[in-house]
Structure formats: structure tokens, C-alpha cells
Image (tube, rainbow over all chains, first blue to last red; front, side, top):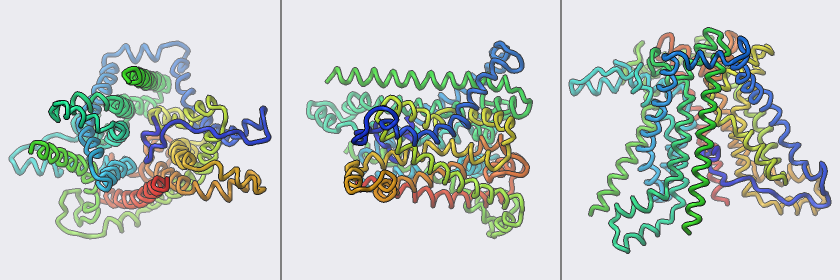
Length: 301
Length: 264
């Protein structure tokens, strides 16, 4: 999955080389592992241990039990934060898909030079500072901003874009686009376009050929992109915090206030468990769906 | 005729989406040169006073210096660790072990940042690392590692392993082979990994917000707290400089990656 995020998809799993000659078994065969050890140690200390510490804290702070979870699911206001987070993520995913699908399709039919330009346009924002981009949206969407100034020319507005869910969505969708475009493109570019020609030669109109042949074949990309966008938007902090309304907080903002403001480590941990479990569940479902899809296609062949 | 129409519609959609991806961010550039105290767009007069303001304010200058220092250290540490790990992953004959290790190495990309932030904050408080340079470098290194691993792995996969066998048959030791044969050939992947690692650290906000201290604030954190307090065009000047720096570095990184691809 992470391969989808890299500027150049490395493609597939790591390749194994034949073992160095003259050595067999024991440490000799596993010497490459020693090279991974330093990175793994840093990860264990600064990633695995802290995250595990948070999860354990959810069940033990301030005292052992599931108190933090009953607190979270017991209050309608907290559950509302969770549902709001999910609905925002769902909307962001749908809008991303609607915008990214034609864009990725265009990349597959464009000339190599145009394709490179379109790819660069997707990759650059992916690496552009989140803070800078959110700040730019804040300036554009504020009540005296460009968008409302433009609407004012037509006698409309001002529309409250900042401190609203609309503002959050506009900012989030723009930032999440690469996560949708790249998986879509990598799947679409692998589709054999002669299938479309074949369908048309058999009498299908171009639109029908596209809908019945191309779209079904692109579904693995849709699934991968949607999952990436959905998962990433569940954990968004900066954009909703700056563009959203404080009264309509999403789960990550809520976690921030509980931990940083009120020092409720256990409650923050409980929300981390809920967020992480959801992320893991969705990733697992995607994996299963992809495997099932591959099997169906292999069977059809 | 309708096919041509459909193609035109596709291009119009594509160009609009492309504009929407890139254009909004660029608004910070003209804003940073405004002569007004407010962030109204388009500016009516021009000046460089906000850049003077930025470099005259010790808080902004310190934040910039901190971000550059942390970014460079992260680039060095993450590149060394990540290159070694990528090399080990591609050469490890235990496929199951390599798969498990790579899942762990790439996990920081998938786990929501806020979860990492809370965990790291708690642990750093315990070991008195919060707000320290070492703490910042360690936390950002973990987030930057996946990008180095992915980038270096990609170039190792196009690397012809027989070259190492040839070097070994000519009497080169394992270290000499790596230094004189493998490393020069995978250099584009290593450099683009280092650039991405720097940019990851330079842009990081969420974890930094938690582990910051009055004595150590990075540039994105300084921006975040200024946005929530007051908005003056100094922010736009800071944003423009970040934008210029990261664009140059990332374009370099992407160019290196695509050169590697063409060589394939």
C-alpha cells in the first residue's frame, strides 16, 4: 500500500537474491537481517513502544478496566464526534473519487509528455507543506477572502466557508487527491485498451464499452484509492483544526484536547484504539476484497 | 464528433482539477509581497516588509533555524538507517522475515499521525525528551524512514545483482563491493530518499505540536500557533519560503527518480 505513495511505484514485493556462495545456514544466511536491525530498533523505541503504551493506557489509566471506553461510547456528544468523523471521511472519499477518476483516466490516454506533467501536478502538492496549503485555503475561504469576493460580484454571499464542514472538505479533498489519483492511475494504466476496441468492433457504443469493460476493470484501483483516502482522512488533524468549526470537532481534535488540554491520557488512548481498530479493519477488508477480485479475474481467464 | 466532444470534456475536467490542485496554494506568494497589514487578495501595493519582518523577528528566525537543523539531521539519520534496511530487505533470503520487517518499516505511513503523536508525547515526557533536539530528530526519523526505504528499495530492484558477484570474483570484500559498486549505482534512489526525508521532517506538524517546547519550536509549529493567534502577512512570507524550498527539493527528488526509471 505504501508503494502507492512513493513517487515511483517500486512494484511488488522485495526480491530475494541467491544467498552468498560458500555460506549456508546459521547467521551466515541471515546476515542481511543485521542491516535491518538498527532501523527496527529505532522504530521499536519511537513508534511501536509509544503506540503500544497508548493502547495499554486506554485500559489502565487512571485505573484498570474499560472505564475509558464506557465514557466514550456512553456520551451522545462523543459518539457524534465519531459519526461526524466518519461522515466527513466518507464525503471526502466520494468527492475525491469523482474528481480523480476522470483525471486518472486522462493520464492513461494522454501523450507521454502530458502524462508526465499531469503526474508532476499530482506529486508536487503531495509533498507541499500541509501547513502552507491549509493556510492558503484559510486566506481564500475567509469571509473577506477571494472566493467570497468572487461570489460578491454576483450579489451572493458572503458564505461562511471557514469554520464549517464545507471548508474542511474543500481543504481535505485537495490534500487527499494524490492518494486517490495514484492507485487509480496505476490500475488503469495496466488495463488493456484493446479490450475497448474489441467491444466496439462487436457493436458496443464507446460509452457502453467504457462502462461495461473499463470501469469494472478499474475497480481494484477504486477500492485501493478509496480506502487510502478514507483512512487518511479519519486521522486528519491540522486541516479540520484550522478550517473547521471548534463546535464540530473531529476525533483527532477531540483527542488533542483530551490529552494536551486536560491530560486525560486514558481517554485519548481509548479513542486511539477505536481509530486504529477502524483503520486496521478497513485495511484488512481491502486486502480481502483485492484477493477475492484477483481470484475472480484469474478464474474468468 | 461526439468522441471529440467527450475528449474535450475530459481535458477540460483534467485541467480544472490540475488547476485546483496547484493554484490555491500559490495565493501565498503575492500575499507575502503586500504592503497592507491584512491578508486581502489581490494586494493593492507591493513591498518586502513582511520578509524584513520575518528575519527581524527572533521567534521566526529561530523556528527556521530549528527546522533546517532538525531536517538535515533527520535526512542523514533516516537515509543511513533506511538505506541499510532497504539493502537488508532485498537481500534477506527469508521472504517471510523480510515481508514482516517491511510491514513494520512502512507502518508509520499508515497509522494515523495523531496516534503516533500522543504515544510519542507520553513516552518523551517520561524520558524527558519532549522539546529536545534528540527527541525531534528521533520522532521525525521514524516518519521519514518509510520514504527512504521505498525509494532505495525501488532502485535496488533495478540493480543487477550479478555486478556484485563480479566484484566479489575479482577479490573485492563485501564492504568494498557495496561502497564501490552498489552504492554509486543506487545513488539516485538514496539521494531522492534523503530529499524526501528532509521534506517530511521540514513539513511535519502534528507530532511536533505535541513535543514542542518554548525553547524548541519548528517552522510549521510556529506557523500553526501564529495562524490561531493573529494573521499577518509574515505568515505568507514564511509560507512562500517553505513553498520555494520544498518545491526545489522535491522536484530534484522526483527528477532523480524518473531518471532512474528511464535507465531501466
